[in-house]
Length: 422
Picture (spheres, one colour):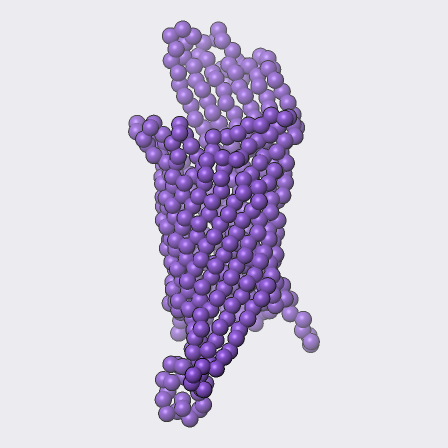
């Protein structure tokens, strides 16, 4: 979807539709509240962080660019498995992960063509209008960050040494993705009226002067498979632990700065939206086959137990009034209200069980009318669940709250405008 007061970095082909002379600055935050449960246990946790920071810039009449920062992936878990053994005594397996990868991106797009055709219809005083536009764009994403995976076994008695494996991977490389966007405005009749006709029928202008408001948007996005450069530190050692600290006994193996690659799969997304007057209805589908993902270090390849990931989503957007200059329209009537639903098959496969995820979201964007611009306050909430408690698995139920701010120059404050007189 394309809006001239928002940056859709999911499809870089949208950047060239940012309003001329009106750059867009936006920042968003999110808070996620999780409830994890099995058939016998449950636990609650939460996380708060930056969801995105973006800047969109119009370039000339047919171009646009954007840059920003957003999380790409996050790791955060701690799992403890207590084992009772009659021969060697009680011991505990501990699995811990933390860190993540961030994405800094810069992208550009350009309109391939933009046409408006006016043709005479059967009635000489009417016109038929067709409008269409096609654009393409590309993002250069710089992925950087570090994540850690740690596993250990801790024996209760002092007869056996405890063992720990610390695996740290640092990522630093570029990933490219592209997009295509097509807009088509259906033909509509527009009657040319003179002043005498308007005096005879005051409603004639309203009846005939409006052009067609029915249009169709289509988008296509994707990225090729990429091998990201990475470095790995691996430390395996034995230790004895007390309630205060760990005391290393012996190093089993240690490697530092080992070069390798993370092989990411191809991704593809397609979507369409129908805009009719005050309502916009859209749907999209995304797919990525994570079964081809692998990590390669020092000539050895490790494949994870991942599968095909796909997600389908539908949404509706409503805005009662669109004329911000009309003082009769208050902030709530000029607000944009949204509702959506999504269903996905995650790439996670646990004990041969594929995990699915569903979510429903609600949102609103309210204009900051006192600013005299297209600046907006954005709010959103999503509820959903992932996984199942069947087969001794963990089910995750979540509530995500989002708040953001979109800032644009004032109505009479045009940027990048070459003035003839100061």
